[in-house]
Length: 638
Image (cartoon, rainbow, N blue to C red):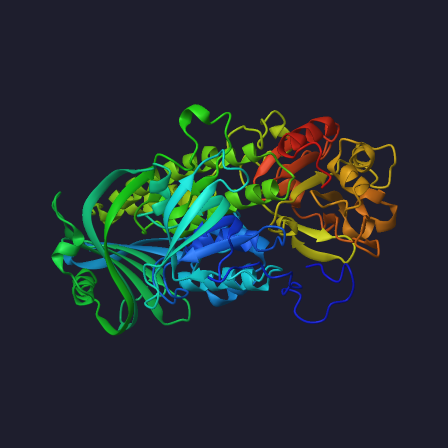
């Protein structure tokens, strides 16, 4: 964490100096904003937390409820989401507060007495080595709290406007800078039904499965329902079930299935309980089921173990459905190549599914983590608005993969077990096969204006093009701090260039690494050079980080290229955190772990959302600059 760049500032470094408060009218609302976000769920708050860091971007986030969530709904946080939280700065706090899922157990009918259940398998929950982050569970409300803290501590001091919902949108691309007229409706008791109007440059609908924003752009959810009721409850309980603090998948002979999920704090437990099959014309509400019905069904499935529920903290009954929207933004099909989008949908507004794979909150946040940096880049004047078209291209494929996976997983969980005593149960095999998907690590973006081809994949075989940057341990040279290389990435609009040096003397001024750094610092096409010429910090757009093969005790920091010792801020202070090394022990290092070509080295360009955009030889800075200039306006030093 870096601070004090422009002078000593006492107090909590997570609290940024406040910028001027946005202007509002007599109704307490602004007349114009850059972005309006509908909905304070995880997707909406993830986006708001990104935008809040930029004082030049005016943002509103509206929520029909009267205040923040306190309990219920989602709870599973994938390792990929934890990697994302690291960029916001609260992954460590969340790791301490949550429950880590280390093992998953599987229970099926006991062959000697099928009326009872017996443990038939157990596996490590997350495959070894796929991430430095754990898979954790925690109340969704705490995720909201952490995003809200980021917003409150950001320069804009952004806070949600509660008791407001979007009632209608008028969109006309020809209406100048604020082409979206947003009709808001008050939902608080004193002013219920009151109307307000705000004009916006962009609107993002994170307003759930019944999204008003989706309807306004002509979008519909398409898919099917499984006609199966499930109950979910968070409980404080006494039980003799031995795996109550493990993630457990239980399939009974005749009473259905249960997913047991331990929760944070050491005592709380969540149960997903398979309830009744519904007819094709029946809705789950027609059954009039209560929390007592969930408890009774759970007790039958867990036989011969007991379940004594002391407190039901939260419960719900839901019906499984799998649906995907046909519109992720407002641009008609015949105008995709010529018109930039102004309205977007994210999260449950564009994909709905069962909660049993633990993907809903994770994929929803992934939607707006993808969109956020693009909106920032456009609104800050760095990129052409057509960059925003890549949101729909990239997230539609991700959502489709989610729906397909959830179809398969839901059927596997609900299927009646027919395995013999000595076999690995089908559910266990399906769990292992889907492990990378549920970890959030199968997203791979296709070639586009922001993702290059994999022509040079051989330079970094363990860092697949289009996938998220898989971190590995390094040692920071200046202070010998062991750390994860990927943790150098911070949330925002800035891209990161990881330059892996080939064999040789780091101080050799004739080396390929030195020549590449020369071009970064001096080539007029380089974003670093452009920022320097514009009087900005050199790394305002592109953050270069160098990794050397030598141990940290074998390199003199002062012998390295000046581009790795940049002057920044009003005092031209030196940034000491651009260079990393191995630990010098001879054990497998980042070059081994990620398949980096030791003889040639590699340039790994990483997008602000942590996905790999280019893999290039050190000699191809012209390709690097051309690629970046296709993302940023060439005029940008600004």
